[in-house]
Image 1 (cartoon, rainbow, N blue to C red):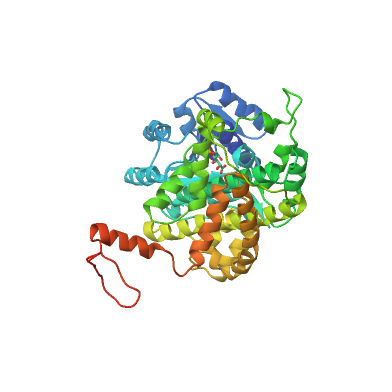
Image 2: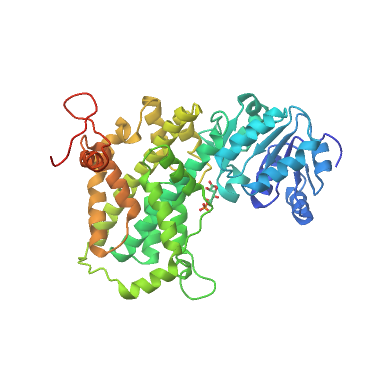
Length: 470
Ligand code: 6PG
């Protein structure tokens, strides 16, 4: 590799890193990649064809090949590997060089790394990248956070490689410190919620509506042509049509009902709890991943516990129509929960997040891309300071109208003994938010009764304690 010839470097040439780098090369930049595996380094050069791309296993050679200030992105597994890679690069870097962590790093790690690297004169960005392998190759949604001037060093490249919607790039500076990784974490929390809502919709359409896999594919295909149009609905339809290579049946029926997780959904729930912000549909999705992994226990319990169901037959077409509306209702509410968390934590962490920009860059490239995000964007244009999307004039009346279908579907689920933790949590979140009085006056009374924790009153200011029962 000759000296200072390459515009952009990547450490980690797994499928995400290699695809992202090939995407950069497609836009006319000379790219260099480094990986411990010589095979992966070679694969980069082969796949790049006649574009200017070089792969190596040597840190020294890699760093020396980059133009200054060097722009080095890491797409390596989140956690200690990121620190190991940064430490291996540091002795070779110069002041002003830029490291971009493009993995799903836990945001407190990003805050720590920002401070450590700034002290050493190295610029650092924590960047959320969404869209999977295909997104990385053809245009992901990119959520950069850190120092604004560091972002400007690399902004033209990120704008070139990102997905475009109506010609607008799906990348925007999110805010300082760990803002980019925080936004990506919440993106994944919303992703978990919508995936769980889709799983529940599948369960209900199949077991209450009686739909076959072919009909499920047709139903999700039709839904993907209207308000529910989104990447996740699109791939859901595709999945139901997939035949199994190993048996005569459909692949979906051969897949074990245990879903794994890498942690970003759980972090969203944990952080929301830490900040006192309710995100019950995201919590439900994380919980259901846990329930799914209790496979052996569930199989045993299925022999012992029965539902005593009183499910009645339904008109399949009418039920599917209610299901569609219920899914739309709960999907809007999942976005509302995630965005309310972003709003609250933005103030707490001084990220200065712009919800309109977030909705704008989520419209394309990322896993939760959906036509709904254009309406969400408009809601924030109309009212930038709105606390919760549910109260926006863009959504309030449609949610009021859609709620009836969600109630119908949840009632059917309860009657049939089908778990709908996500759908019912979205409905209860809506019901709790729209009620001016909740029964937690009783909770306050109990706390004062057993622990003299005091309470406030509805009719006068101040803090009160009662000698209960006296
Ligand atoms: C994305 C995805 C991605 C995530 C996978 C798997 O935006 O491209 O969110 O970052 O790693 O979806 O996540 P889980 O293993 O936690 O389901």
